[in-house]
Length: 325
Image (tube, rainbow, N blue to C red; front, side, top):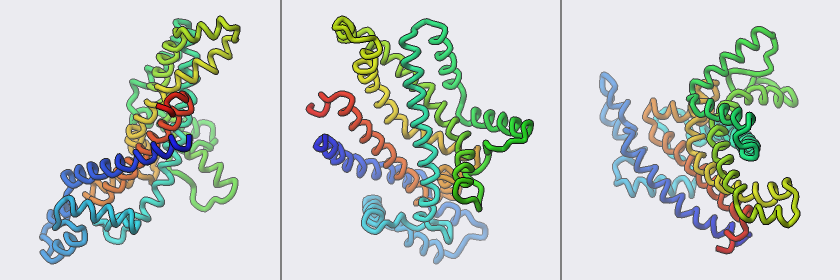
């Protein structure tokens, strides 16, 4: 298993280099770091434009600029300068990435657990009232845009809080300043509930359908009937053989959807006033801050690669034949 994990980790390194280069190309073509400065009226002195241009390394070819950015980041931990005076991208990331990671990882865990339960129950009770109810809930969440669902849920909780006078579930921000210890923990949970529910339910809807289809496919397999014929109970057959095999397609889908979840986190953070990476990206786009956009996309690429690496390792756990392929 260790050799399998190391092999997958080594494969991820060139994938990461290529993905960061593609991200660098896209940002280079899509954003002009000097756009807002040049649009000022009256125009700024040429010396100011030249100084910022040199600071951002804009007078070099794209491969030279990429290597400069890449070497500064990985040999010196420097994300590059920001066009916003007094802003450190490293500090900005340090404060925002923890909030976004907390939200995204918790939402993925909640969505995966719900999707597995719903998919298995729906498949084993195919065409029953339970199956139809789970299917209806799944399609309901599939049809709701994340942004709209977030606003509806936020407004519902605001009305609930006002009518009951209990404000344990917060609708804005990621925490209350000044709290410590258990009070800070409870407060953080209260702020985490709504954005987690929004992100988790939007992913749960599609993942539960994958799990149901995968489980139905496995239930019709010959080896499942053979296991039952050998005297194993239905529960043993389902858990030892059926569920384990049926989790492989869901594992793939979860890894592929990480980028979409990060995109959904941008909208969710905006609705619930979280100062995470979503806010950082929006501010970076509004100010055409080249290195801020690049930092967000690079961290997103790392998230996707890490989750794909985890998925590869899970394949090896779920199906030992893959480790020896």
